Amino acid sequence: MKKRPHFKATLTYLATEDGGIVTPVSSGFRTIIRFPYDTKELIANQTFLETELVFPGDTVIADLILLDAKETLEKIYTGLDFDLLINSNTIGTGVITHIYPS
Image 1 (cartoon, rainbow, N blue to C red):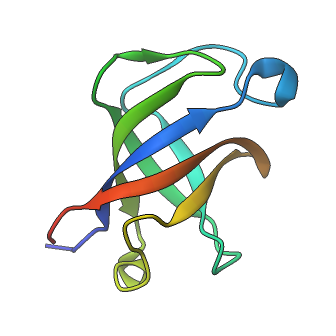
Image 2 (cartoon, rainbow, N blue to C red):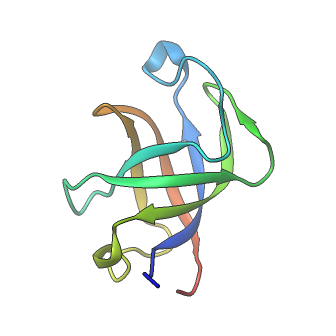
């Protein structure tokens, strides 16, 4: 079984007028994550913990699992920030608050 980086983060989605999402998204939403130490874009599956729907401009707590990112496991840490992207456009930001043991 593959080890995949799994962590909890606070996510802040930009408002639509600031370039964020236009419609609400639900748990299971996949987005691209880019960490500040690398230009590599990683796919992340998001599970929202306190709500099922997230609207433009919302801040939420979510569990994230990075897909095909085993080399990232040693590089991430609590407090690390990252960008959320769709089609290379930033739609929000996040901060890792907890890393689950693999």
